[in-house]
Amino acid sequence: MTPCDLSQLQTEYDNKKWPTFLALENDKHSANLTLSVSDTLLWFNGHFPQQAILPGVVQTHWAALLSIKLFFIEHPLSNINNLKFKHIIVPDTEINLSLKKNPDHSYVSFNYYNEERVFSSGILKYKAIS
Image 1 (cartoon, one colour):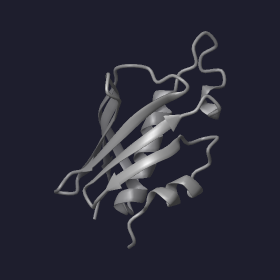
Image 2 (cartoon, one colour; image 1 turned 30 degrees about the vertical axis):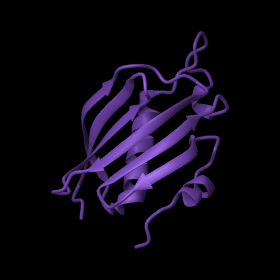
Image 3 (cartoon, rainbow, N blue to C red; image 1 turned 45 degrees about the vertical axis):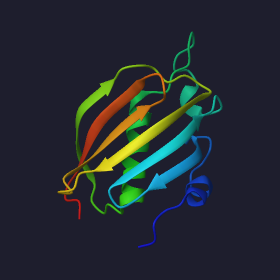
């Protein structure tokens, strides 16, 4: 298995549904990504008229699928624990995503943040991480 690199993420993920990937540092147990959340993402359409925000379900979806890709997880997501949304993510925001695969392979924790705040966090449990 070849580790995923930044250029793969930039080419494989549709920029209408995914953020722009600006940086990636990863190894077999952790990944740190820098993301630009463009105002052109389809998730902002109609969510909400007075102030567009990135839905929490999208944040969780991105973290889950990126965990599968970066850590070569072959099993489906079975549970999400300790899910917290502390601050909204608005269009044209640069954020970081930290993914940490637990050493005993039972879960991946995620955290969206920037220098000022933590936006959201949670624990993604997969049926059997190998």
